[in-house]
Image (cartoon, rainbow, N blue to C red; front, side, top):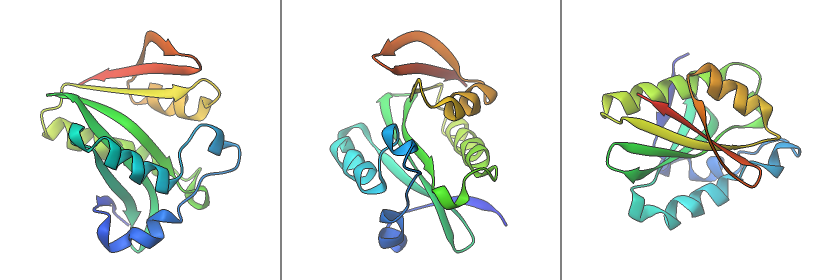
Length: 144
């Protein structure tokens, strides 16, 4: 099937039940926390999209504007039932394509040092570490 992102409203209940593994919960927010975070950052044009394929809601992605032309990839996860199937890569590729079409010039994100799966995915998509860190969070950027 075709992977796509869609708005939240038709799927609100299902979206709130998306979850990650117990180990990942140490460095990824829950779906309700992501929605709360998006609301808190609404002045930065925060957006939450559902990652879905067919009838399945696979995960969530939240972005917000740092400044015009610069996007912060604030939150991103694939539900534990759908991990290790390539959906994370597909979803990120779709997001990057969408941001390029919107003339975004730079994307920044943080990952927790312990989350090497995320680090590997982001590096493979062209993100590079900036050398900045905040405790155990490492900053990466992608210039489009």
